Image (cartoon, rainbow, N blue to C red; front, side, top):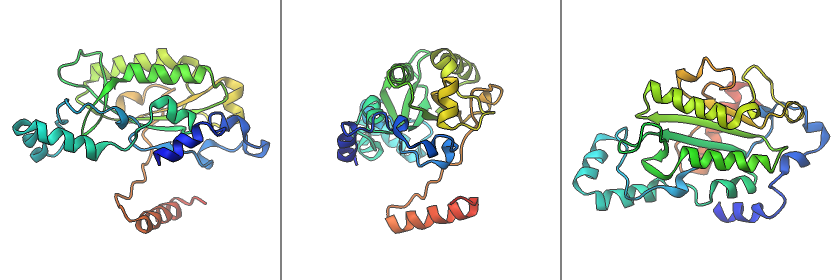
Amino acid sequence: MAEALRSRAGSGCTDWMSQLPPQLLDVPLWDLAIPGSHDTMTYCLDQHSPVLRSEPRILVMLDHIAPCVTRPCVKKWATTQDLSISSQLDAGIRFLDLRIAHKKKDSKQTFRFAHGIYSLLTVKEVLTEVAHWLEHHTKEVVIIALSAFDDVSPAQHNNLIGFLMQLFGKKLCPKSETPSLRACWKRGYQVILSYADPSGSRHEKLWPEWDYWWANESDPNLVISYLEHKKKKAGRP
């Protein structure tokens, strides 16, 4: 998968939305096939960080007893990406799956990504990189799903939301819109941001949590069967 993304990064996928045929420009984005990355930020997991407290109790206990064994194993299991965020965007990825967490020893204003263990890079560093990328690709629209929020307090949610509003500003597409590419270009929208916590519900520019179709299967046939069932149930083509 990583090799395929690397090859796509230099094959004209960087600005693929701007190159779509006219008949697709007024189609709602949710009716287009949007490539995304699962656990987008796992390319920079910190092998020396503790296991998240939300992980199974036995795993947390093992981390306290033998971290030198537990953490490398968790990192190997949890890593699903090896390309940086900008490289993923260059390769055509337009859906970012970002699981947020607060690490106990960090300041209250510092947030990281997590999947079993914490990331080396902070939320501020990575999303600022995304914002800079968008400045150079003005017709590309990125869908960002923020979820999990391990050990994030209500006050910290307010701080994080404030940062998001300041960083993306007018690029944020309101949840009242039915976004198509042409509509987004006309209004300058480049970010559709889902915030999977009730604290985001009062903000017009933060979309609610989306249904996540996850088969939790390694057999491709079972995954396809699961997705076909979900599509049929949802009435999607």
